[in-house]
Length: 304
Image 1 (cartoon, rainbow, N blue to C red):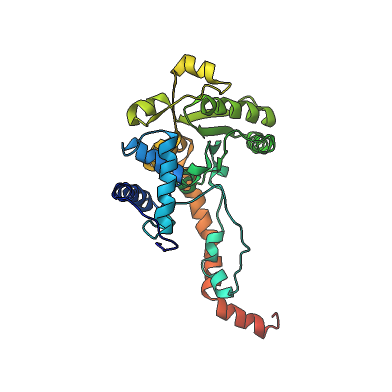
Image 2: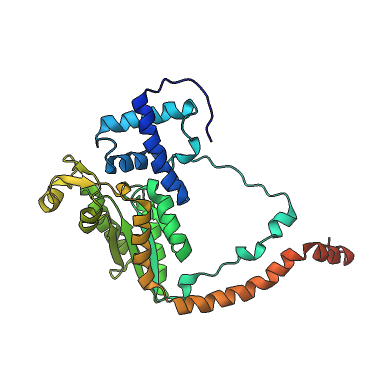
């Protein structure tokens, strides 16, 4: 939605820049995704529209703010995932509650498999991308927002411990930046999950961002942060460049995540479970479809 709030002067160069930004946003919209400003920035860098530096990032923020306030750029295509307001949920119609009630019944697909899998991503900005890949495969996921807190690491360890106690093989799939901290986060997640699960056999797979993907997709490099306490080991192995996970296109990450999860899925076992799910849903669907008749019978019986 484009709404005018106040006037901003946009020079011709800024208008051309915005046209390219709209093209990137349209690609995301076509996939049912929204961009953060940071994601838009890295996509513009990777396409050679702007240079990769803090000055260009701040300029992007200024131009986008001015364009949206002046009604030139759509507010709906950019979101801030770090700040969310929460509101009470209201549903005042019994008919709308009962319509489709059968779909509230959903059986745990992983309960019939040998493995228990979770997907973690370093950045909250990529949570929607991970969600899109994980939801169709009924796979738990989490945006870690950097290093996990002790509380969340403990809770994760307990989940993996329960899975192991059920005879399953726990697997943690991780995606992070290719920089000193981003690389270290994978091993940190592994060590702390194993600690709190009291289980050294938990498998941890880092599926992105890795050097083969950097070589293939050529995301724009950044200087490695030399003040990072992990920089020395990182530079010794990879050199002085680093790369952001955000710079990969959503469809690339989508494929990487799905390909990592699929080997742990037994489709025949899932098909059997889905048949059972449909059987259990049938009476619920009948309730929703015939609510008025059910309500009348209850009234005649003096139950309401």
